[in-house]
Length: 144
Image (cartoon, rainbow, N blue to C red; front, side):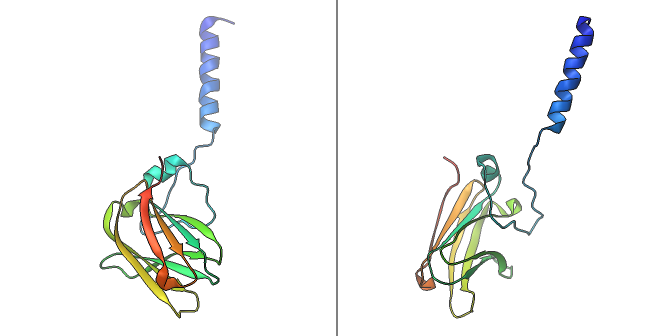
């Protein structure tokens, strides 16, 4: 095989491999959130903000996001003893006025935390004890 043919074959194989390799991109529509059991890599974490909810209580809670001029928007549900990470809409960040509302599933108690200043590559850690009125939140960098 001639040198130029070898170069052409090598280029074609490289292009084929590059096209077939899996490349995952975080795509969330504006105003929407992605929920569920997620494995968040450091690259995705730098492109948006994360919400990590640790429900240490004995009942289900629902978490809503609030911003000035917006109705509260449901973003996550945490079962008793559950720790859940939710990827938030990257188009919302940076923001200086985001609050989180924690509601019991039966509607008997509620707590609003915030407002917080949140940037991309940050995680909001919500710790929810059995008494929702004692819930607390901190904002930290998502990756070292």
